[in-house]
Length: 308
Image 1 (tube, rainbow, N blue to C red):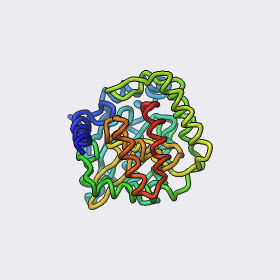
Image 2: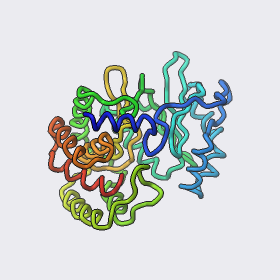
Image 3: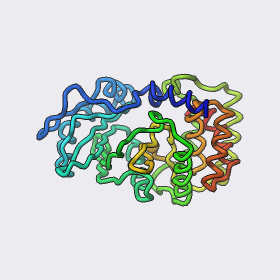
């Protein structure tokens, strides 16, 4: 647990991959009747860098699309924005005061992320989804805000929290995958073969070719008998939120896989990528969730080498 406490303190300082871990209030709150776009300059720059062919049209369309989404849901933006690398994430409220989180992303794969989010919500693992909308420039989602909403990156998980996660992962393991979304295997294989220099954890870079080659063999073995099951695929601490007496998963990657992979990623990130501690934690969570501990351990090898 000492290792977990050290990792939790580091995550509270940085959030996931260098992002601020807590929600931020924009300097200029949204107008109550005609919403404007509180897009942080860093988000705009990140979107331009990642999708230079899509970002300009997305940014231009945001004010109108945000207004339309708010009208469709009968909600009013509060002026609160949430940290996101290359997406607009804002809070809105209903006339009764219920909080809703609106998200717009120019990512072409956001349609897959939204599909997985909806399936997670149906399984009771993610907050209720009120809107999925694809436009020529972006994908919008609207879901209930988790309250109080502190993530595992902000509030160190206690043993009872890990027990709750294990219960959720047991549910996840029984869910079919989303037919329209890709498998996580090609994405992992690409990271092992050609590590992206612009998408690495802040405290480390790509692994050596020898480590990645060995992990590729493990990945092939895992993929040989992996079913296309529902998978969060990015179950890092910022994506597990505390609700009222329960936990929620948010921001899935948008790929099919298996629960053992999610266990591996969560264990790695809770242990700040310390491999031996992550293996032990992954096996413990797997046993508690009726998941194969050997597969969870093997996925730790793959996820670590791919520096997810």
